[in-house]
Length: 94
Image (tube, rainbow, N blue to C red; front, side, top):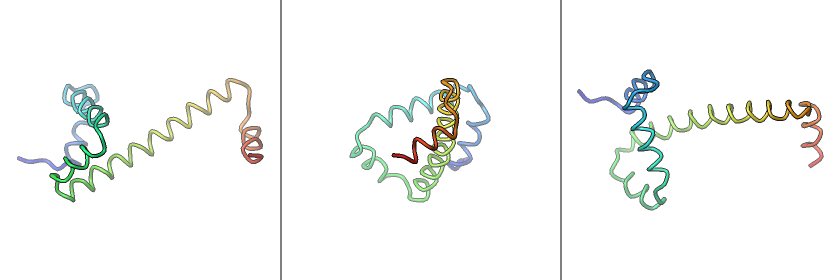
């Protein structure tokens, strides 16, 4: 039985520390270390609907991670005694 990329991602997501998830993460890290040309060349062998699904999944993760980073930065700034209003005022001046 063949699984779609989306179905596979959902299964792996449910298995938080599974060996499959760890190996898949390592594979994605290795992919990130490849040249753009090499990635494009390999992507030409993947059906377009799968590429679109992969891109969609990555966009979802990027948005979630962006929110995580903003939250971390907000905590760091608050720990330094800088209020949100002070930060807004500073950014408005720039």
